[in-house]
Amino acid sequence: MPASFSVKAGDTKEPLMLQLLNGGEPENLYDCRVRFYCTNGIKGDAEIRDEENGIVWYVFSENEVSDVGIYKAEFEVIYPDFHTQTFQQI
Image (tube, rainbow, N blue to C red):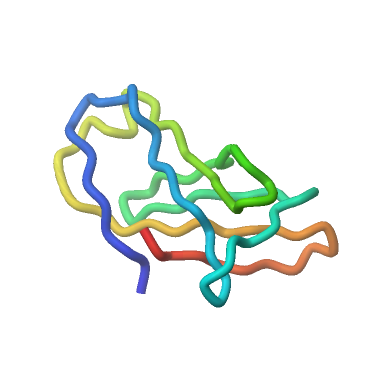
């Protein structure tokens, strides 16, 4: 089950940031792609901020945060060999 997060309607300044952990250790994101998925239909490419420490973020556009609510989200890592893994510890 994806983890929950909350964002105030209209707030676009602060991205949703997460350190992706695998077995308690940061996931190495070298040469990976990361996608963001949310239960309200938002989806898009997340930005890798620190490959070695597994830090990613997703910056919302104004229309993506127009509805008030608590949503569930996940980050999907696509590795260079095209395997995928989903991270939900928000």
